[in-house]
Amino acid sequence: MHTTPGLQSVHSAQLFLPHTEPPAPARTIEVAPGILWARLTLPFRLDHVNIYFIDDGDGWTLIDTGLGSKTTQAAWQSLFDGLLRERPLTRILVTHFHPDHVGSAGFLLQRFDVPLYMSATEYLQSLNIHLNPGALEAEHYRLFYLEHGLDAETTQRVVTSGHAYLKLTSGLPPVFHRLIAGDVLRIGAREFDVLTGGGHSPEQIMLFSRADRLFLAADQVLAKISPNVSVSAIDPEGNPLGYYLRSLDALKQGIPADVLVLPGHNLPFYGMHTRIDELVAHHRARCDRILQACRSVPRSAAELVPFVFTLNLDPHQMGFAFSEVLAHVNYMLRQGELKPTASTDGIRRVVAKP
Ligand SMILES: [Zn+2]
Ligand SMILES: [Zn+2]
Image (tube, helix red, strand yellow):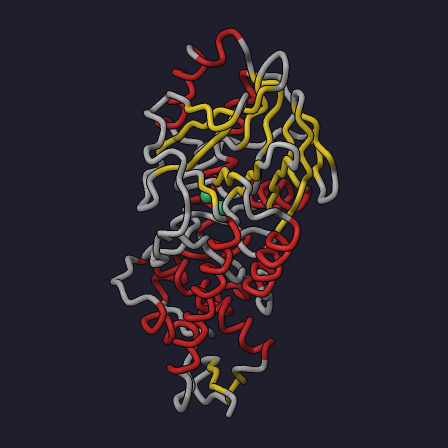
């Protein structure tokens, strides 16, 4: 969920993977002293999400919760009966608002009376969808997609995604504990620096233990796939790819190269700086394809999709692909690589600057 369709990013041979297999369902692997890794399944092409339990003295601080689905809740039941029977959750930290991360928070908070830690933007983004799941269906949002050349079927699917979100999540508590970049979060005997990054989601939380050389990267840096970076109709001229590249640069400057990365998907790995270089190159290659396609012919974001995603996309994937291509277009407009062209049919198109 919320990762690029086609999963075109290549797996780096230069990363070191301390575990070549994920934990079995409802089981955990200790990835560092007092830090357990578990997996929950997702009913998508990306079929899993990673969650972590961090030793917090009397219990565990949970990082992310999985989807708010019956399957995930059955998996949680096994964890209640096993790992959590003697040592319950002490708090729940959700890295970002995507349903594969926040989805079971409401379900878990019915069982454990513990605080929910999130960044303000991610909490409010999720709450906003819960309060008004049909908001994107307004005419000006619909027009935004149509003006960028998206077909009517995909537009309909994208503007109704708030209702899909509600089906994949189990609600939020009325209060939360705000995390903000620069905070130091003590969990058990460890201190974690709190970092945030944009691009994949507005204010995604990441945790860094300098003493133990551990980095909980959420979806910002993944070993195998490239996290989805999408323009939202609410911020139509937004530059999420610019924010994402800025965040990757900050991570490379601020986090040592030898950390063990504990990500939201794929396997834990060493080699974060190498992986960041690959992700930057991956986006540059996509920009170059767009530049090539717009060299002499003006094209809309929707018309550019087949130049970037060569696989056949189903309507669900098409929405993500379109929003991702638009993120590249908006970035390239800011960089001065593309310029808008005059249109006679109401569709917004761009062309390469000479
Ligand atoms: Zn995500
Ligand atoms: Zn995710």
